[in-house]
Length: 339
Ligand SMILES: *Cc1c(COP(=O)(O)O)cnc(C)c1O
Image 1 (cartoon, rainbow, N blue to C red):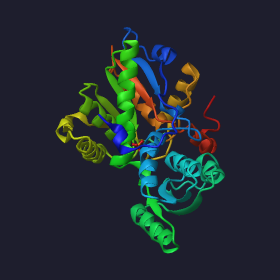
Image 2 (cartoon, rainbow, N blue to C red):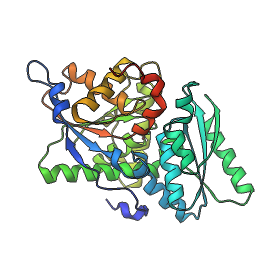
Image 3 (cartoon, rainbow, N blue to C red):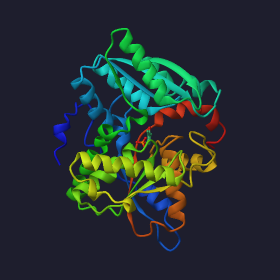
């Protein structure tokens, strides 16, 4: 698989570590000794202004933006978007301007949610931010900002929400290759990969990468927003398109795409008791900082499924996609819940 022909620019700290989670494994062990042997792939440590999964996507997207002689990156996300933070950092790094549209998706009026966490970092990184109401057509909003930039003589490059198009998803094809190589090196047989799945690029890139290289490792996406049928359809479509770009569309089959969307709770970006339990358990067993929107929800799902015996005897790699910077946007929500 010749990913170099897509000319990514390099700034991520790769490979990210693959580490065991011995104390979380022990905490999830059932009375009969069942439960998963848990490992974590540390994509929270990709190195760009706090890191996270968008950094791998941005290596490919920035490669494309620079090849197209862009001078302004434009993207969008929810107020506490990690994708926006990493895009703002990538823009700074390459001397590009950055126009951001933040959507009031959760409806929170809290001071910390709207100004701390990722928002504070977006501002620090020099992005130009505008906010729009929840439910705004964000693709249209991106197009409008792009024409504004072009009208004043700029050269815009639009990155979709989450960086999830075929170019961005190549970052997770690369992650799949990297993970399989790491596991082979240490003789680890991975039975399953578990990851949060949102705008679909991470999940689709992993599935496409594993399928194209012929690695028979199932990926379980834990949904954070859309219902199962919508999420799986989005991931499947993108995974097929990515595999096609790599010359092997037929290798991605519908059964390879599995999302469990039973752990979304009250909605995107809204925390509940089980999310807080997951944040506390990961922190207090293996010192792992998860986030309230994505990895905390994915871990909520992983914990519930492990307790039901879904992973008994399996070696499970949890993909840590980052997001801990968002914790500071949820101080009000978490206050009093951490005892
Ligand atoms: C964006 C994001 C995800 C979801 O990845 P997608 O490619 O959008 O599905 C998961 N975790 C974190 C921390 C994120 O910021």
